[in-house]
Image (cartoon, rainbow, N blue to C red; front, side, top):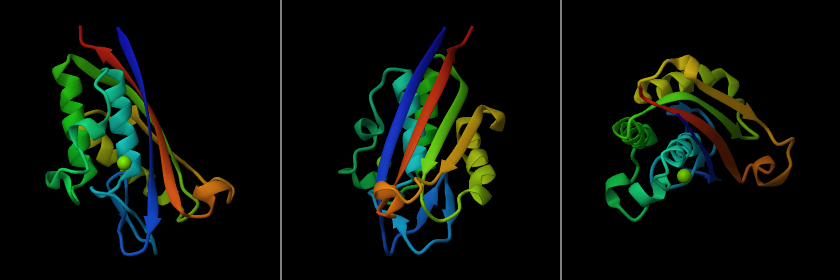
Length: 159
Ligand code: MG
């Protein structure tokens, strides 16, 4: 039995914040703003997993009003979400994701992102795909006001 979920997240780009994507600290003049490390890619993936098990979204479990999650690595949140999937008897068949970012170049960091995500979820890296695109300078992503991430996850019930 298969279950599918999708996730979407946007964070604003600001000065004075680190740019963390897929758990990778990427050198850049701007970073994503948010309560946690604002890792939009990991948030979208976590929401896709929660969607697949019918458990709402990450805001429900890790509210931005809770000081416990302030500045925390989103990989920690993702690990908890992975454990929720496992507890409900599901294994991850695959995850696909897209990061929309005008700058900087994301390609050099994709393998490390995949490794980080696969490691916290306890799956092979070939089950996790990360893609990146610019928006050809169009819209808020193109104007470098923010970044957006999209993800889908397919889960399979064990035995
Ligand atoms: Mg978010």
